[in-house]
Image (tube, one colour):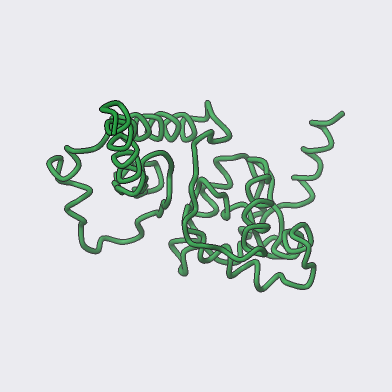
Length: 211
């Protein structure tokens, strides 16, 4: 075998291993910390940390991530920069590579795809998202897809609410609902005094924007 062919095979092998070498980094945000996990080229998971709980040494110990590839270091830098821009109000949409690895059903893929098209400052109801995904009677199933979303914030399940403007659910508890409202308000979604999305004001703003 020629030497260059052997080197190419070794490089391919390293690239393959690197692509499945996961690293997690914790990022502070105004609403709490978020853990972001990447493989060799993309985000594979992101989850807000609600409550204290235990601390993962892989996240806090610099030695545990000292062997990151240059691509992973660059991606974590991009993630940190875009999170800072998002929460400072200078960025609306994330432009980061995502790689969902949970082998979703076609319906789940459709829901996630439609979810990714919801603009910052806008919302869809579970029923509207079900209709957009091709199953108008599957609002409850859409809720399940949102609940099991592996990449929170970057796949914006927080932009999906219940009919009538109530928040529905987020991360399975009251603190999660507070976080959901905080994220939506940061994006410019209006709320009524009783904590529901103000669809009337939202529609008025959208009409003004397009005229």
